[in-house]
Length: 115
Length: 111
Image 1 (tube, chains in turn green, yellow):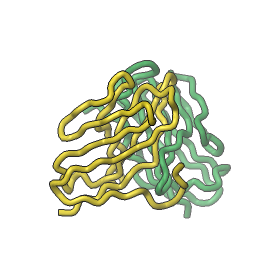
Image 2: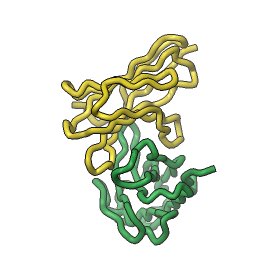
Image 3: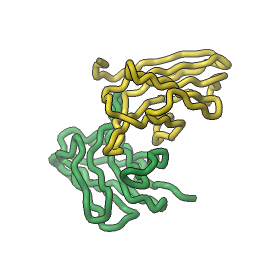
Image 4: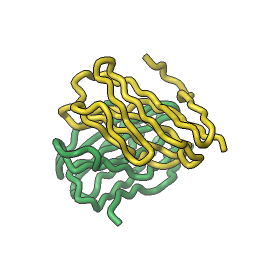
């Protein structure tokens, strides 16, 4: 089955700790994205990558970092600089810029809680 | 515009009724629109899309209507079922093809 896998499903972070959320896709998609979802709000773009070894900041990149060393993988690190990290994090992928967005696929999400 | 808060707009319907969920988009340059369904604790799932050169598109039990004059999008679900209960949100995209997502509407279907 082709798809996009996020892990872990639930993650707990202590104050001052960095944590990394995993996102892997086997859809051969060029582009990958990270979104943050807070209760009652829409999805907000954190970072995106349209090609390996390249990524751009989204609307709320502060306190987050990413890497794109492989086409299949786009991990997100929530650093201690992110003051309010408790949220539901969604990873997505798409065939790439200029292609049909109906291929825009989401993972099942990681719920991060600060303890 | 919508205020930011913890509570989503909610639509409650009876099983078997038709549901209409509305979305106002902001960018007149957007040329591609998508509706997603998100069940609790899960990632959004693609439902249906429409391009700006169309004003209506039908899928299985769903229809999307686009009114570019007033920048309005709607999703109609026929014969709504309890399994349709979820949050529905629209997304708009333009030349960058990175969508902008709306806040969503919670659909509650009563058996």
